[in-house]
Amino acid sequence: MGLFDFIRHIPKNLKRKRVAVQAGMIDAVAHGEDDEYWKYANNAHADEIANAGEREKARARCRYQYLNDGYCRNIIRSFAITVVGQGARLQLYGDNKEINQIVENKFHQWIYETNIVEKLEMAVKAIMFDGETFLRFVYDEHIECGLNIAMIDAARVGSGWNGWNDPLSLDGIRFDQFGHPYEYCIFERVPNPNYNFKYLPEIVPAEEILHFFIPDFPEQHRGLPIILSVLKDFAALRRYRSAVVEAAEVAASTSIVIQTQKLPDTDEPDDLEEFDQVVIPRRGGLTLPRGWDGKQLRPEQPSANNSEFINTILTGIGAGVGQPRNVATNDSSNYNFSSAKLDHQTYYRYIKSIQLRVKHLCDKIFEKWVTCNVNDADVALLLFNATFNEQKIKRDWFFAEMEEIDPTSEANATSTLIKEGLMTHAEYHARKGKDPERQMEIWLAEQKRLRESQPIEPIKETLEKIETVKEPETENNPKPSEPPKEPEPLPKDKEPETENVQNTALNGAQVTSAVDIITKVSTGELPAETAVLMLIEFFNIKAEIATKMIEPAQKMYEAGQQQQTQQQTQQPTNAEVTDNQT
Image (cartoon, rainbow, N blue to C red; front, top):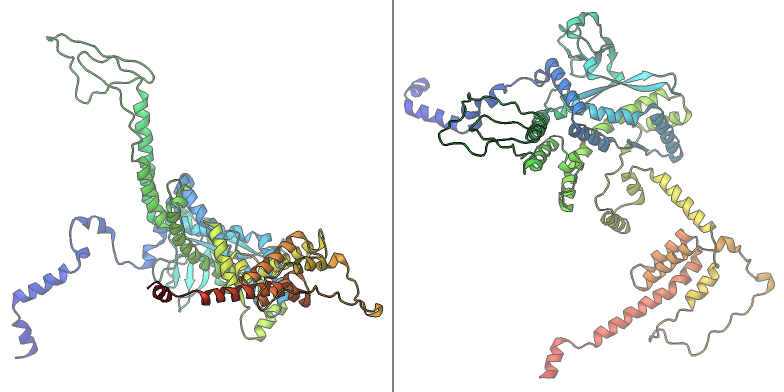
C-alpha cells in the first residue's frame, strides 16, 4: 500500500476530530459575540497601519483633545516636564579635567542661548499628541558658532506628487537599500490635500534631521500619538461630565408646580396626548390640566458614584501613558503613602526609558556642536585626544533625579550608602543632575569661609580643655599619684614660632563637629585612624595635634571594652547557678 493509498483509507470521522480539536484550542479566533469588536483587525504592515491618512486624522483629534481638555493637557505637560526637567547635564570623562570643564561650560552656554531644553520638552509633548517630531540643524547668524535647532511640524514632512512612484520613499522619508533614511521631504507649510501640486518639498539630507518617535511595531517608520489608545476614554469622560451637568440643570430649572387638591368622583381628568410636552417656565409657576398631578424633578446629579466613575476613567487613561492617577489628576487626597510610593516607582521606570531616548538625541546634538566648533582651541584639543585614543569623546548625560516622597528616609539611606562606601559624593551629585567637581569646589570654598569667619579661642586652648577630661581608672591606666611635671622652658633660640591665631582658630560649628568626632571614637562608633584623618582633612589640623586629640578618647574606649570583658568573664553561667541552688 502506497503513501497516498494510506491517506485515502484514513477514516473520515478521525479527520473531523482533528480539525475540531485544532479549532477549539484558540478561543480568541473562533466566531462568537465579539466578532463585531474584531471586525477591524487585520494583518497589515506597521507602515500601513500608520499610513498618512490615519496619522493625519489621529493627529488632528489628539491635538483637539489636548487644547480642550484640562485633564489631557495636565497629563501631557506633566509627563514632558518630568522627562526633561531642567535638561540633561553633560559630563565629560577625558583625561584633562580642566579642558573637560571648559568644554562643558561652553556647551551649556550654547544650550541656554538656543533654548534646547524648551525644544526637548516640546519634542516630548509632540510624541504624545502628534506621535513624532522632527528637529533640524540650521544656521543662525546670531549664535557664535552658527548652529541652532529648529522644530518642524510632523504634518510638513510628507511625500509630494513626485515621490509616490519611488519604491524607497515612505511619507516624506527616502531610505537606502539597507533601510536607513538618507533624505527627508519637508514642505514649506502644511500641504493642502486639494492643492498639493502647488507645493514642492525641500529635500534635506538625513544628517540635518533628528526624527524622534517611539515605534510600537517592527519596521515602523512614522510614529502614532501615545494618547491615541485612550482617546475614546477622554470622549467618554467628556460625555459623562456633560450629562451630569445637564441633568443637574434640568432638575434645578423647575421652581414650583401648582395642582388641584381634590376632584369630584364623577369628574374625569382632561385628555392628554401621549408624550405631550408641557412647557415649564424658568423661575415661574404653572398649572396642570384638571385631574393630573406633577412633581418637581429631584436633583440627583451628580450621583453618589460620580467621583468613583471619574477616578476609574482617569486611572485607565493614566495607565495608557504610564502615569498614576494622582499625577493625572493632581489630587492625592484619597491616597495613602505606600500606594503613592509604589505607583511612582513604576512611573519613574517608564520615565527613565523615555529619558534614554532623549539621551540619544543629546548625543547627536553634541556631536553636531563639536563639528561646528572645531576652530575652538579647547574643543579641538578634546576632539584630538579622543581621536588619538581611537575612541569617541567619553561622556554621559544626567537628568535631575525624581523628588523623593519621603526626603528624610532617603537622606538617611544616602548617608548610610556613603558611610559604607557603596556610593560616592560624586555619584550622589550626578544623580541630582549637578556637576560633581563644581559641587566639590563650592563645598571647599564654604569650608574656607567658615574657617576665616568668627574665630574663637585657638586650638591650644581647645586641646587643654580636652586633655583635662579625667580618664577612667583601670588596671592598665592607674591614677597617677603625682601631678605631671611641667616641661622645662626651651631656649630662646629654639622657641617655636607663634602662629597667627586667626589661621589656627576654629569657629563654633567646627569645634562642635570635632568634639562629635572625638565622642564617637570614645563610644566605638568611629575608628581612631579614620577620626585622625577626618580632623586633618576637614579642619586642617596637624597630624601630631590630631593624634593627641584622639588618643584620650581611644584609651577611654579600650578601657570600657576591657571592663566589659571582665564583667562577662566573672558572671556565672546558668549551669553554675543551677548547681549552686541544688
